[in-house]
Length: 117
Image 1 (cartoon, one colour):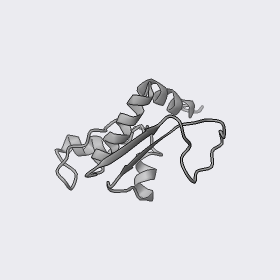
Image 2: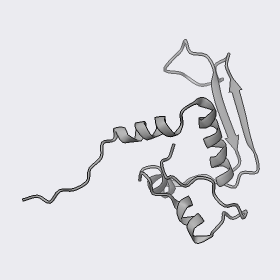
Image 3: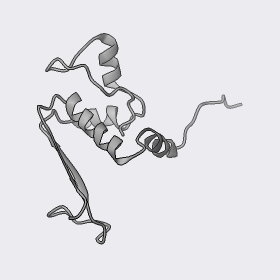
Image 4: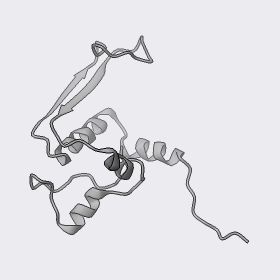
């Protein structure tokens, strides 16, 4: 007899994303919060509703508009991506906050859900 075990569909990632980031403004705010958590000194946001970004090939050539967010925060290495984005709900930021730790610039991280939205 096989012991019962918990399993989950990959579709849960899409469902969580849709429920937690319900509109475009919330998505942009999440990206700016990520810049803050990465100790960025700036986050430059461009919302262009008319043009296509220069030098980018789109799967939707008739679509217009784009959003870019540029910051100078700490990047992610392969291990960060595997732990922080490919392991759902594992949050290094939540662990940092619980332990009272801060980023190198002394910031308490804003993110903590570990959903990699």
